[in-house]
Image (cartoon, rainbow over all chains, first blue to last red; front, top):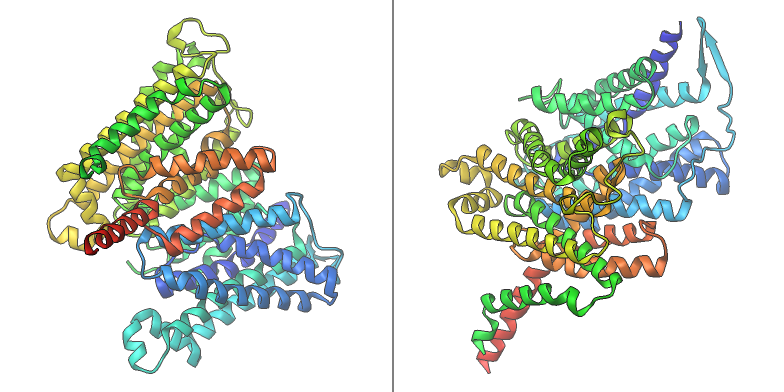
Length: 285
Length: 325
Protein backbone atom coordinates (compact mmCIF):
# COMPACT_ATOMS: atom_id res chain seq x y z
CA UNK A 1 0.00 0.00 0.00
CA UNK A 2 2.87 2.34 0.80
CA UNK A 3 4.38 1.55 -2.57
CA UNK A 4 1.08 2.35 -4.30
CA UNK A 5 1.04 5.68 -2.47
CA UNK A 6 4.58 6.38 -3.66
CA UNK A 7 3.69 5.46 -7.25
CA UNK A 8 0.65 7.73 -7.34
CA UNK A 9 2.60 10.59 -5.78
CA UNK A 10 5.37 10.12 -8.37
CA UNK A 11 2.93 10.11 -11.27
CA UNK A 12 1.23 13.28 -10.05
CA UNK A 13 4.57 15.08 -9.79
CA UNK A 14 5.60 13.58 -13.12
CA UNK A 15 2.58 15.16 -14.78
CA UNK A 16 3.92 18.57 -13.80
CA UNK A 17 7.39 17.62 -15.06
CA UNK A 18 5.70 16.70 -18.33
CA UNK A 19 4.04 20.10 -18.59
CA UNK A 20 7.16 22.21 -18.18
CA UNK A 21 9.29 19.82 -20.23
CA UNK A 22 6.83 20.13 -23.10
CA UNK A 23 7.77 23.81 -23.17
CA UNK A 24 11.46 22.97 -23.47
CA UNK A 25 10.85 20.38 -26.16
CA UNK A 26 8.77 22.89 -28.15
CA UNK A 27 11.72 25.30 -28.34
CA UNK A 28 14.17 22.52 -29.11
CA UNK A 29 11.97 21.06 -31.82
CA UNK A 30 11.21 24.41 -33.40
CA UNK A 31 14.58 26.07 -33.51
CA UNK A 32 17.12 23.48 -32.45
CA UNK A 33 17.86 25.57 -29.41
CA UNK A 34 18.34 24.53 -25.81
CA UNK A 35 17.06 26.87 -23.16
CA UNK A 36 19.24 26.59 -20.06
CA UNK A 37 16.96 29.02 -18.24
CA UNK A 38 13.85 26.86 -18.57
CA UNK A 39 13.98 25.67 -14.96
CA UNK A 40 14.20 29.30 -13.90
CA UNK A 41 10.96 29.98 -15.75
CA UNK A 42 9.30 27.31 -13.59
CA UNK A 43 10.78 28.91 -10.48
CA UNK A 44 9.54 32.35 -11.54
CA UNK A 45 6.08 30.88 -12.13
CA UNK A 46 6.07 29.74 -8.52
CA UNK A 47 6.94 33.20 -7.22
CA UNK A 48 4.43 34.89 -9.51
CA UNK A 49 1.78 32.56 -8.06
CA UNK A 50 2.90 33.49 -4.55
CA UNK A 51 2.78 37.21 -5.27
CA UNK A 52 -0.60 36.87 -6.95
CA UNK A 53 -2.04 35.09 -3.94
CA UNK A 54 -0.54 37.60 -1.51
CA UNK A 55 -1.42 40.81 -3.31
CA UNK A 56 -4.26 40.06 -5.70
CA UNK A 57 -6.14 37.36 -3.90
CA UNK A 58 -8.23 35.10 -6.06
CA UNK A 59 -8.33 31.35 -6.29
CA UNK A 60 -6.31 28.71 -8.05
CA UNK A 61 -7.51 29.78 -11.47
CA UNK A 62 -6.50 33.35 -10.70
CA UNK A 63 -2.87 32.76 -9.77
CA UNK A 64 -2.46 30.01 -12.35
CA UNK A 65 -3.56 32.42 -15.05
CA UNK A 66 -1.34 35.16 -13.61
CA UNK A 67 1.74 32.91 -13.72
CA UNK A 68 0.92 31.75 -17.24
CA UNK A 69 0.37 35.29 -18.50
CA UNK A 70 3.44 36.86 -16.88
CA UNK A 71 5.72 34.08 -18.10
CA UNK A 72 4.13 34.09 -21.57
CA UNK A 73 4.97 37.79 -21.88
CA UNK A 74 8.44 37.26 -20.38
CA UNK A 75 9.10 34.52 -22.92
CA UNK A 76 8.16 36.80 -25.80
CA UNK A 77 10.25 39.66 -24.44
CA UNK A 78 13.26 37.37 -23.98
CA UNK A 79 12.86 36.08 -27.53
CA UNK A 80 12.63 39.57 -29.02
CA UNK A 81 15.39 41.13 -26.95
CA UNK A 82 17.89 38.30 -26.80
CA UNK A 83 17.19 34.99 -28.52
CA UNK A 84 16.32 36.42 -31.94
CA UNK A 85 19.75 38.01 -32.12
CA UNK A 86 21.80 35.00 -31.04
CA UNK A 87 19.89 32.41 -33.10
CA UNK A 88 21.99 33.06 -36.18
CA UNK A 89 25.18 33.63 -34.17
CA UNK A 90 27.84 31.10 -33.21
CA UNK A 91 27.03 28.15 -30.95
CA UNK A 92 28.94 29.79 -28.11
CA UNK A 93 26.64 32.79 -27.91
CA UNK A 94 23.55 30.57 -28.18
CA UNK A 95 24.59 28.60 -25.14
CA UNK A 96 25.97 31.59 -23.24
CA UNK A 97 22.80 33.61 -23.76
CA UNK A 98 20.38 31.34 -21.92
CA UNK A 99 23.03 30.12 -19.50
CA UNK A 100 23.71 33.70 -18.44
CA UNK A 101 19.99 34.34 -18.32
CA UNK A 102 19.58 31.39 -15.96
CA UNK A 103 22.20 32.81 -13.58
CA UNK A 104 20.67 36.26 -13.80
CA UNK A 105 17.16 35.04 -13.01
CA UNK A 106 18.23 32.56 -10.32
CA UNK A 107 20.36 34.97 -8.32
CA UNK A 108 17.97 37.87 -8.81
CA UNK A 109 15.36 35.63 -7.20
CA UNK A 110 17.80 34.89 -4.37
CA UNK A 111 18.39 38.59 -3.96
CA UNK A 112 14.71 39.55 -3.95
CA UNK A 113 13.06 36.58 -2.24
CA UNK A 114 16.02 35.27 -0.11
CA UNK A 115 17.17 31.67 -0.10
CA UNK A 116 14.51 30.50 2.35
CA UNK A 117 11.93 27.92 1.38
CA UNK A 118 8.45 29.31 1.02
CA UNK A 119 5.06 27.81 0.26
CA UNK A 120 1.72 29.15 -0.79
CA UNK A 121 -0.58 30.20 2.04
CA UNK A 122 -3.48 27.84 2.63
CA UNK A 123 -5.57 27.74 -0.52
CA UNK A 124 -8.95 26.32 -1.32
CA UNK A 125 -7.20 23.12 -2.37
CA UNK A 126 -6.39 22.00 1.18
CA UNK A 127 -7.43 18.59 2.41
CA UNK A 128 -6.89 15.00 1.37
CA UNK A 129 -9.00 12.38 -0.28
CA UNK A 130 -8.79 8.76 0.77
CA UNK A 131 -9.26 6.50 -2.21
CA UNK A 132 -8.82 2.75 -1.90
CA UNK A 133 -6.51 3.00 1.09
CA UNK A 134 -4.16 5.69 -0.20
CA UNK A 135 -4.18 9.37 0.67
CA UNK A 136 -4.38 11.91 -2.11
CA UNK A 137 -3.81 15.56 -1.21
CA UNK A 138 -6.36 17.49 -3.26
CA UNK A 139 -3.76 20.06 -4.32
CA UNK A 140 -1.49 17.39 -5.85
CA UNK A 141 -4.42 15.68 -7.52
CA UNK A 142 -5.70 18.89 -9.12
CA UNK A 143 -2.18 20.00 -10.11
CA UNK A 144 -1.41 16.64 -11.74
CA UNK A 145 -4.73 16.45 -13.59
CA UNK A 146 -4.48 20.04 -14.85
CA UNK A 147 -0.89 19.46 -15.93
CA UNK A 148 -1.84 16.41 -18.01
CA UNK A 149 -4.77 18.29 -19.53
CA UNK A 150 -2.60 21.27 -20.46
CA UNK A 151 0.16 19.11 -21.94
CA UNK A 152 -2.43 17.36 -24.09
CA UNK A 153 -3.88 20.73 -25.00
CA UNK A 154 -0.45 21.89 -26.16
CA UNK A 155 -0.10 18.71 -28.18
CA UNK A 156 -3.45 19.31 -29.88
CA UNK A 157 -2.63 22.96 -30.42
CA UNK A 158 0.47 21.90 -32.33
CA UNK A 159 -1.05 19.04 -34.30
CA UNK A 160 -4.67 20.04 -34.89
CA UNK A 161 -4.92 23.81 -35.24
CA UNK A 162 -3.98 26.39 -37.81
CA UNK A 163 -1.53 28.12 -35.47
CA UNK A 164 0.10 24.79 -34.72
CA UNK A 165 0.57 24.06 -38.39
CA UNK A 166 2.22 27.44 -38.85
CA UNK A 167 4.53 26.82 -35.92
CA UNK A 168 5.53 23.45 -37.32
CA UNK A 169 5.94 24.92 -40.79
CA UNK A 170 8.48 27.41 -39.45
CA UNK A 171 10.23 24.62 -37.60
CA UNK A 172 10.43 22.52 -40.75
CA UNK A 173 11.61 25.12 -43.20
CA UNK A 174 11.90 28.75 -42.31
CA UNK A 175 12.18 30.14 -45.80
CA UNK A 176 9.49 27.91 -47.28
CA UNK A 177 7.16 29.05 -44.48
CA UNK A 178 7.99 32.64 -45.33
CA UNK A 179 7.00 31.99 -48.95
CA UNK A 180 3.64 30.73 -47.68
CA UNK A 181 3.02 34.05 -45.97
CA UNK A 182 3.99 33.03 -42.46
CA UNK A 183 6.17 35.39 -40.45
CA UNK A 184 8.76 33.18 -38.78
CA UNK A 185 9.74 35.76 -36.21
CA UNK A 186 6.19 36.03 -34.92
CA UNK A 187 5.82 32.27 -34.79
CA UNK A 188 9.07 31.82 -32.92
CA UNK A 189 8.14 34.57 -30.48
CA UNK A 190 4.84 32.76 -29.95
CA UNK A 191 6.71 29.50 -29.36
CA UNK A 192 8.85 31.18 -26.70
CA UNK A 193 5.74 32.62 -25.11
CA UNK A 194 4.03 29.22 -25.07
CA UNK A 195 7.15 27.53 -23.76
CA UNK A 196 7.67 29.97 -20.91
CA UNK A 197 3.94 30.08 -20.23
CA UNK A 198 3.82 26.29 -19.90
CA UNK A 199 6.76 26.47 -17.48
CA UNK A 200 5.08 29.28 -15.53
CA UNK A 201 1.78 27.50 -15.12
CA UNK A 202 3.59 24.29 -14.20
CA UNK A 203 5.39 26.29 -11.52
CA UNK A 204 2.10 27.70 -10.23
CA UNK A 205 0.59 24.20 -10.12
CA UNK A 206 3.59 22.84 -8.29
CA UNK A 207 3.46 25.74 -5.83
CA UNK A 208 0.03 24.61 -4.66
CA UNK A 209 1.44 21.34 -3.38
CA UNK A 210 5.17 21.72 -2.69
CA UNK A 211 7.39 24.28 -0.93
CA UNK A 212 10.25 25.83 -2.92
CA UNK A 213 13.25 28.20 -2.91
CA UNK A 214 15.05 30.04 -5.74
CA UNK A 215 17.45 27.12 -6.23
CA UNK A 216 14.73 24.73 -7.46
CA UNK A 217 15.12 26.16 -10.96
CA UNK A 218 18.42 24.36 -11.43
CA UNK A 219 16.92 21.01 -10.49
CA UNK A 220 13.86 21.52 -12.68
CA UNK A 221 16.02 22.61 -15.60
CA UNK A 222 17.99 19.38 -15.41
CA UNK A 223 14.82 17.32 -14.98
CA UNK A 224 13.44 18.99 -18.11
CA UNK A 225 16.62 17.98 -19.98
CA UNK A 226 16.24 14.37 -18.85
CA UNK A 227 12.55 14.34 -19.74
CA UNK A 228 13.14 15.82 -23.18
CA UNK A 229 16.02 13.43 -23.82
CA UNK A 230 13.85 10.48 -22.82
CA UNK A 231 10.76 11.60 -24.73
CA UNK A 232 12.59 12.59 -27.87
CA UNK A 233 13.56 16.14 -28.78
CA UNK A 234 10.61 18.06 -30.16
CA UNK A 235 7.87 15.61 -29.21
CA UNK A 236 5.26 16.99 -26.79
CA UNK A 237 3.48 13.66 -26.46
CA UNK A 238 6.86 12.03 -25.85
CA UNK A 239 7.59 14.44 -23.04
CA UNK A 240 4.22 13.63 -21.48
CA UNK A 241 5.11 9.93 -21.23
CA UNK A 242 8.68 10.70 -20.26
CA UNK A 243 7.60 13.15 -17.55
CA UNK A 244 5.37 10.53 -15.98
CA UNK A 245 8.16 7.94 -16.17
CA UNK A 246 10.70 10.31 -14.60
CA UNK A 247 8.30 11.23 -11.80
CA UNK A 248 7.73 7.55 -11.14
CA UNK A 249 11.43 6.65 -11.19
CA UNK A 250 12.24 9.55 -8.91
CA UNK A 251 9.57 8.63 -6.38
CA UNK A 252 10.48 4.95 -6.33
CA UNK A 253 14.22 5.56 -6.04
CA UNK A 254 13.61 8.06 -3.25
CA UNK A 255 11.50 5.42 -1.53
CA UNK A 256 13.94 2.54 -1.92
CA UNK A 257 17.33 4.27 -1.83
CA UNK A 258 16.72 7.48 0.12
CA UNK A 259 15.84 11.00 -0.92
CA UNK A 260 19.42 12.07 -1.72
CA UNK A 261 19.81 9.34 -4.30
CA UNK A 262 16.78 10.22 -6.41
CA UNK A 263 18.71 12.95 -8.26
CA UNK A 264 21.63 10.61 -8.80
CA UNK A 265 19.31 8.01 -10.35
CA UNK A 266 17.62 10.57 -12.61
CA UNK A 267 20.86 12.20 -13.83
CA UNK A 268 22.42 8.77 -14.22
CA UNK A 269 19.48 7.82 -16.42
CA UNK A 270 20.16 10.90 -18.52
CA UNK A 271 23.81 9.96 -19.04
CA UNK A 272 22.80 6.39 -19.87
CA UNK A 273 20.28 7.73 -22.42
CA UNK A 274 22.90 9.87 -24.10
CA UNK A 275 25.08 6.78 -24.36
CA UNK A 276 22.55 4.29 -25.65
CA UNK A 277 19.60 6.08 -27.15
CA UNK A 278 20.37 9.74 -27.78
CA UNK A 279 17.28 10.24 -29.95
CA UNK A 280 15.02 9.38 -27.00
CA UNK A 281 12.33 6.76 -26.59
CA UNK A 282 9.96 8.17 -29.17
CA UNK A 283 12.38 10.25 -31.20
CA UNK A 284 13.42 9.46 -34.71
CA UNK A 285 17.07 8.62 -35.33
CA UNK B 1 56.78 52.17 -33.74
CA UNK B 2 55.51 49.14 -35.56
CA UNK B 3 58.15 47.04 -33.85
CA UNK B 4 56.90 47.97 -30.38
CA UNK B 5 53.38 46.90 -31.26
CA UNK B 6 54.36 43.49 -32.56
CA UNK B 7 52.81 40.58 -30.66
CA UNK B 8 56.16 39.15 -29.65
CA UNK B 9 57.15 42.29 -27.76
CA UNK B 10 53.73 42.37 -26.17
CA UNK B 11 54.16 38.81 -24.89
CA UNK B 12 57.59 39.62 -23.47
CA UNK B 13 56.25 42.68 -21.65
CA UNK B 14 53.32 40.66 -20.30
CA UNK B 15 55.64 37.89 -19.09
CA UNK B 16 57.93 40.42 -17.40
CA UNK B 17 54.99 42.10 -15.67
CA UNK B 18 53.66 38.76 -14.43
CA UNK B 19 57.11 37.75 -13.17
CA UNK B 20 57.67 41.02 -11.34
CA UNK B 21 54.15 41.50 -9.96
CA UNK B 22 54.58 39.76 -6.56
CA UNK B 23 57.94 41.45 -6.00
CA UNK B 24 56.57 44.92 -6.64
CA UNK B 25 53.37 44.25 -4.71
CA UNK B 26 54.72 42.35 -1.73
CA UNK B 27 51.56 42.77 0.33
CA UNK B 28 49.88 39.41 1.01
CA UNK B 29 46.53 40.81 -0.15
CA UNK B 30 47.84 41.66 -3.63
CA UNK B 31 49.77 38.41 -3.90
CA UNK B 32 46.61 36.52 -3.06
CA UNK B 33 44.77 38.34 -5.84
CA UNK B 34 47.66 37.46 -8.13
CA UNK B 35 47.40 33.76 -7.26
CA UNK B 36 43.61 33.84 -7.74
CA UNK B 37 44.09 35.53 -11.08
CA UNK B 38 46.59 32.90 -12.22
CA UNK B 39 44.28 30.07 -11.20
CA UNK B 40 41.35 31.63 -13.07
CA UNK B 41 43.57 32.12 -16.11
CA UNK B 42 44.81 28.51 -16.02
CA UNK B 43 41.29 27.03 -15.72
CA UNK B 44 39.83 29.29 -18.38
CA UNK B 45 42.73 28.62 -20.76
CA UNK B 46 42.18 24.90 -20.24
CA UNK B 47 38.45 25.28 -20.93
CA UNK B 48 39.31 27.38 -23.96
CA UNK B 49 40.91 24.43 -25.78
CA UNK B 50 37.63 22.57 -26.14
CA UNK B 51 35.13 25.37 -25.52
CA UNK B 52 36.85 28.09 -27.51
CA UNK B 53 38.97 26.48 -30.20
CA UNK B 54 36.78 23.45 -30.89
CA UNK B 55 33.55 25.34 -30.20
CA UNK B 56 32.19 22.54 -27.98
CA UNK B 57 30.79 24.55 -25.10
CA UNK B 58 31.18 22.69 -21.84
CA UNK B 59 29.08 24.02 -18.98
CA UNK B 60 30.28 21.33 -16.57
CA UNK B 61 34.05 21.65 -16.58
CA UNK B 62 33.96 21.65 -12.79
CA UNK B 63 33.89 17.84 -13.00
CA UNK B 64 37.50 17.82 -14.20
CA UNK B 65 38.49 20.58 -11.79
CA UNK B 66 36.93 18.63 -8.94
CA UNK B 67 38.62 15.38 -9.91
CA UNK B 68 41.96 17.15 -9.87
CA UNK B 69 41.13 18.66 -6.50
CA UNK B 70 39.86 15.52 -4.82
CA UNK B 71 42.40 12.96 -6.02
CA UNK B 72 45.52 14.36 -4.27
CA UNK B 73 43.68 14.81 -0.98
CA UNK B 74 42.07 11.39 -1.21
CA UNK B 75 45.45 9.68 -1.52
CA UNK B 76 46.84 11.87 1.24
CA UNK B 77 43.95 10.92 3.52
CA UNK B 78 44.11 7.21 2.70
CA UNK B 79 47.84 6.57 2.59
CA UNK B 80 49.55 9.83 3.49
CA UNK B 81 50.91 10.41 -0.01
CA UNK B 82 52.19 13.92 -0.63
CA UNK B 83 49.45 15.77 -2.56
CA UNK B 84 51.81 16.29 -5.48
CA UNK B 85 51.82 12.52 -6.15
CA UNK B 86 48.06 12.54 -6.71
CA UNK B 87 48.22 15.22 -9.39
CA UNK B 88 49.10 13.00 -12.37
CA UNK B 89 46.56 10.41 -11.25
CA UNK B 90 43.90 13.13 -11.12
CA UNK B 91 44.85 14.14 -14.64
CA UNK B 92 44.57 10.56 -15.87
CA UNK B 93 41.17 10.18 -14.21
CA UNK B 94 40.03 13.42 -15.86
CA UNK B 95 41.13 12.13 -19.25
CA UNK B 96 39.21 8.92 -18.59
CA UNK B 97 36.10 10.87 -17.68
CA UNK B 98 36.54 13.03 -20.78
CA UNK B 99 36.55 9.91 -22.95
CA UNK B 100 33.46 8.53 -21.19
CA UNK B 101 31.54 11.76 -21.82
CA UNK B 102 32.98 12.54 -25.22
CA UNK B 103 32.45 9.12 -26.82
CA UNK B 104 28.63 9.23 -26.88
CA UNK B 105 28.00 12.98 -27.07
CA UNK B 106 30.48 13.77 -29.83
CA UNK B 107 28.62 11.44 -32.17
CA UNK B 108 25.96 14.13 -32.14
CA UNK B 109 26.31 17.77 -32.92
CA UNK B 110 25.41 20.87 -31.01
CA UNK B 111 23.85 21.09 -27.63
CA UNK B 112 24.01 17.46 -26.55
CA UNK B 113 27.54 17.92 -25.28
CA UNK B 114 26.59 20.99 -23.24
CA UNK B 115 23.59 19.24 -21.73
CA UNK B 116 25.60 16.15 -20.91
CA UNK B 117 28.38 18.11 -19.23
CA UNK B 118 26.05 20.02 -16.91
CA UNK B 119 24.21 16.82 -15.97
CA UNK B 120 27.38 14.80 -15.33
CA UNK B 121 28.90 17.61 -13.22
CA UNK B 122 25.75 17.74 -11.09
CA UNK B 123 25.66 13.96 -10.86
CA UNK B 124 29.23 13.85 -9.56
CA UNK B 125 28.66 16.75 -7.17
CA UNK B 126 25.64 15.10 -5.55
CA UNK B 127 27.30 11.70 -5.52
CA UNK B 128 30.44 13.07 -3.85
CA UNK B 129 28.29 14.61 -1.15
CA UNK B 130 26.90 11.19 -0.24
CA UNK B 131 30.12 9.17 -0.49
CA UNK B 132 31.76 8.81 2.91
CA UNK B 133 35.15 7.65 1.53
CA UNK B 134 35.72 11.14 0.13
CA UNK B 135 34.37 12.85 3.22
CA UNK B 136 30.75 13.30 2.11
CA UNK B 137 29.40 16.81 2.33
CA UNK B 138 32.24 17.88 4.65
CA UNK B 139 35.01 17.13 2.18
CA UNK B 140 38.69 16.38 2.66
CA UNK B 141 41.62 18.14 4.30
CA UNK B 142 45.24 18.23 3.20
CA UNK B 143 48.41 18.29 5.32
CA UNK B 144 48.12 21.12 7.86
CA UNK B 145 51.85 21.35 8.47
CA UNK B 146 54.37 20.53 5.77
CA UNK B 147 56.32 17.34 6.40
CA UNK B 148 58.87 18.49 3.85
CA UNK B 149 59.07 20.73 0.82
CA UNK B 150 57.39 18.03 -1.25
CA UNK B 151 54.09 18.62 0.53
CA UNK B 152 54.05 22.07 -1.11
CA UNK B 153 52.49 23.61 1.98
CA UNK B 154 53.92 27.11 2.30
CA UNK B 155 53.04 30.00 4.55
CA UNK B 156 53.90 32.59 1.95
CA UNK B 157 51.92 33.17 -1.25
CA UNK B 158 55.14 33.67 -3.22
CA UNK B 159 56.00 30.02 -4.04
CA UNK B 160 52.40 29.37 -5.08
CA UNK B 161 52.47 32.37 -7.34
CA UNK B 162 55.50 31.13 -9.26
CA UNK B 163 54.30 27.52 -9.41
CA UNK B 164 50.96 28.70 -10.81
CA UNK B 165 52.72 31.01 -13.23
CA UNK B 166 54.84 28.13 -14.52
CA UNK B 167 51.73 25.97 -15.05
CA UNK B 168 50.00 28.85 -16.86
CA UNK B 169 53.03 29.13 -19.12
CA UNK B 170 52.84 25.40 -19.89
CA UNK B 171 49.12 25.63 -20.71
CA UNK B 172 49.57 28.68 -22.93
CA UNK B 173 52.61 27.24 -24.72
CA UNK B 174 50.68 24.03 -25.37
CA UNK B 175 47.73 26.02 -26.69
CA UNK B 176 50.04 28.06 -28.90
CA UNK B 177 51.57 24.84 -30.24
CA UNK B 178 48.10 23.42 -30.87
CA UNK B 179 47.13 26.59 -32.70
CA UNK B 180 49.93 26.16 -35.19
CA UNK B 181 49.58 22.46 -35.85
CA UNK B 182 47.23 20.42 -38.01
CA UNK B 183 45.27 19.55 -34.86
CA UNK B 184 44.55 23.24 -34.28
CA UNK B 185 43.38 23.77 -37.85
CA UNK B 186 41.12 20.74 -37.51
CA UNK B 187 39.61 22.29 -34.38
CA UNK B 188 38.92 25.57 -36.13
CA UNK B 189 37.41 23.75 -39.10
CA UNK B 190 35.09 21.83 -36.77
CA UNK B 191 34.08 25.02 -35.02
CA UNK B 192 33.30 26.75 -38.31
CA UNK B 193 31.25 23.88 -39.70
CA UNK B 194 31.31 20.34 -38.55
CA UNK B 195 29.71 19.00 -41.69
CA UNK B 196 32.14 20.84 -43.97
CA UNK B 197 35.08 19.65 -41.86
CA UNK B 198 33.91 16.05 -42.12
CA UNK B 199 33.47 16.29 -45.85
CA UNK B 200 37.07 17.50 -46.14
CA UNK B 201 38.30 14.42 -44.30
CA UNK B 202 38.76 15.81 -40.79
CA UNK B 203 38.40 13.00 -38.22
CA UNK B 204 35.77 15.01 -36.36
CA UNK B 205 34.98 12.76 -33.42
CA UNK B 206 38.58 11.88 -32.67
CA UNK B 207 39.68 15.51 -32.87
CA UNK B 208 36.93 16.68 -30.55
CA UNK B 209 37.73 13.86 -28.16
CA UNK B 210 41.44 14.74 -28.13
CA UNK B 211 40.64 18.38 -27.48
CA UNK B 212 38.37 17.45 -24.60
CA UNK B 213 40.99 15.11 -23.11
CA UNK B 214 43.71 17.76 -23.31
CA UNK B 215 41.40 20.37 -21.83
CA UNK B 216 40.30 17.97 -19.07
CA UNK B 217 43.89 17.16 -18.10
CA UNK B 218 44.80 20.84 -17.73
CA UNK B 219 41.58 21.63 -15.87
CA UNK B 220 42.33 18.79 -13.49
CA UNK B 221 45.80 20.25 -12.91
CA UNK B 222 44.16 23.56 -12.08
CA UNK B 223 41.97 21.79 -9.52
CA UNK B 224 45.06 20.17 -8.00
CA UNK B 225 46.80 23.53 -7.75
CA UNK B 226 43.76 24.99 -6.06
CA UNK B 227 43.65 22.25 -3.45
CA UNK B 228 47.39 22.26 -2.85
CA UNK B 229 47.13 25.95 -2.02
CA UNK B 230 43.96 25.89 0.08
CA UNK B 231 44.52 22.44 1.60
CA UNK B 232 40.81 21.76 1.74
CA UNK B 233 38.02 20.68 -0.61
CA UNK B 234 34.29 20.02 -0.41
CA UNK B 235 31.74 19.03 -3.09
CA UNK B 236 30.55 22.57 -3.79
CA UNK B 237 33.96 24.20 -4.13
CA UNK B 238 35.11 21.31 -6.35
CA UNK B 239 32.13 20.38 -8.52
CA UNK B 240 29.80 23.35 -8.00
CA UNK B 241 28.21 24.92 -11.05
CA UNK B 242 29.87 28.24 -10.27
CA UNK B 243 33.31 26.72 -10.86
CA UNK B 244 32.20 25.94 -14.41
CA UNK B 245 30.61 29.37 -14.75
CA UNK B 246 33.84 31.06 -13.76
CA UNK B 247 35.81 29.29 -16.53
CA UNK B 248 33.11 30.03 -19.07
CA UNK B 249 32.79 33.72 -18.27
CA UNK B 250 36.53 34.40 -17.99
CA UNK B 251 37.19 32.81 -21.37
CA UNK B 252 34.16 34.35 -23.08
CA UNK B 253 34.83 37.82 -21.72
CA UNK B 254 38.40 37.89 -22.96
CA UNK B 255 37.67 36.03 -26.17
CA UNK B 256 36.95 32.33 -26.52
CA UNK B 257 39.16 30.64 -29.07
CA UNK B 258 42.01 33.11 -28.77
CA UNK B 259 45.33 32.38 -27.09
CA UNK B 260 45.35 35.29 -24.64
CA UNK B 261 41.59 35.78 -24.34
CA UNK B 262 41.26 33.86 -21.06
CA UNK B 263 44.25 35.70 -19.61
CA UNK B 264 42.69 39.06 -20.43
CA UNK B 265 39.32 37.91 -19.12
CA UNK B 266 40.90 36.89 -15.80
CA UNK B 267 42.85 40.15 -15.66
CA UNK B 268 39.57 42.08 -15.73
CA UNK B 269 37.28 39.75 -13.86
CA UNK B 270 39.37 38.73 -10.85
CA UNK B 271 40.11 42.26 -9.57
CA UNK B 272 36.46 43.13 -10.30
CA UNK B 273 35.32 40.16 -8.27
CA UNK B 274 37.62 41.06 -5.37
CA UNK B 275 36.34 44.62 -5.45
CA UNK B 276 32.73 43.44 -5.61
CA UNK B 277 33.28 41.17 -2.63
CA UNK B 278 34.79 44.02 -0.62
CA UNK B 279 31.97 46.40 -1.55
CA UNK B 280 29.01 44.08 -1.20
CA UNK B 281 30.57 41.99 1.54
CA UNK B 282 30.85 38.24 1.73
CA UNK B 283 32.33 35.88 -0.84
CA UNK B 284 29.78 34.29 -3.13
CA UNK B 285 27.20 36.95 -2.39
CA UNK B 286 24.24 36.75 -4.75
CA UNK B 287 24.93 40.14 -6.27
CA UNK B 288 28.23 38.95 -7.77
CA UNK B 289 26.41 36.21 -9.66
CA UNK B 290 23.67 38.54 -10.84
CA UNK B 291 26.43 40.65 -12.37
CA UNK B 292 28.09 37.53 -13.80
CA UNK B 293 24.83 36.47 -15.43
CA UNK B 294 24.34 39.96 -16.81
CA UNK B 295 27.85 40.03 -18.26
CA UNK B 296 27.38 36.63 -19.88
CA UNK B 297 24.09 37.68 -21.49
CA UNK B 298 25.61 40.93 -22.76
CA UNK B 299 28.64 39.12 -24.25
CA UNK B 300 26.34 36.63 -25.98
CA UNK B 301 24.08 39.34 -27.33
CA UNK B 302 26.61 41.97 -28.41
CA UNK B 303 30.18 40.65 -28.41
CA UNK B 304 30.34 36.88 -28.91
CA UNK B 305 34.00 37.31 -29.85
CA UNK B 306 34.84 38.83 -26.47
CA UNK B 307 37.13 41.75 -25.74
CA UNK B 308 39.90 40.45 -28.01
CA UNK B 309 37.60 40.70 -30.99
CA UNK B 310 36.39 44.15 -29.92
CA UNK B 311 39.98 45.35 -29.58
CA UNK B 312 40.92 43.95 -32.97
CA UNK B 313 38.08 45.81 -34.69
CA UNK B 314 38.89 48.98 -32.78
CA UNK B 315 42.61 48.77 -33.62
CA UNK B 316 41.88 48.14 -37.30
CA UNK B 317 39.69 51.21 -37.46
CA UNK B 318 42.37 53.39 -35.83
CA UNK B 319 45.00 51.94 -38.16
CA UNK B 320 42.88 52.68 -41.23
CA UNK B 321 42.14 56.20 -40.09
CA UNK B 322 45.81 56.87 -39.40
CA UNK B 323 46.69 55.70 -42.91
CA UNK B 324 43.90 57.56 -44.61
CA UNK B 325 45.00 60.84 -43.07
